[in-house]
Length: 319
Image (cartoon, rainbow, N blue to C red; front, top):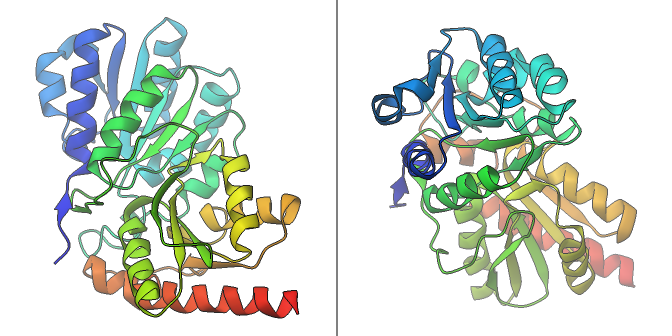
């Protein structure tokens, strides 16, 4: 059984640690303090906690004002409410003036499962923020990476969006791999037959697929693309050139997210067969996280099959 952690708690604990060192760090919620487990922060730093109620547009606008006065506000609520309900405020009040606001989106992807259904499963958020100029976009794989990413976006001036999960997020056994904002991480290097690019809470599935492929005589490399923007173009192009075949794996619509980012880069710099694993332009049902991902073809078997198709396409092209 997959071990899970809590990325919401990891975020708030790290922000509380940051606030102990940085008196400008603040938390803004939109009736979402329970969602992001923010009670401990609010109790310790009540003067740096703002809850605007169910008013996400106001939350982002308030954070913009706070940032313009020298604070470093973290706006934390459901991913879709930030990126959809408050999209204009994110674009016009935060990104356009390049203010130092950090946006934290919970319940990213469909792996939140059966708790709240499609209205609170957010699989368009990354595609939305990718299109807005000047925003750093980070998609951590597990709670350990959330801690690293929270510190990294705090240190990086300007707007940032970080996706966190439902609070039962798969652990990835890769803590010995250094985290650097804007750089990919090679998590498993079995060879150069195919490269599996993944991010978020399906990285563990890409690693499991690599193990299956290795047992079948295929030698894949697994790469964690935790920073979706700015993309590590040089490293990704090198991997595409080395393998000539790629698969992307994401808990997101295949339109606009990791699959789009890799395919766009491939088309521009290194034409390569890229098979995209993700939600295929549909609204998912509710269900337990594991079976739900499998049902929508974001399973280990789907990744294995996609890797073989990518290699077949490459080999036909070579001939």
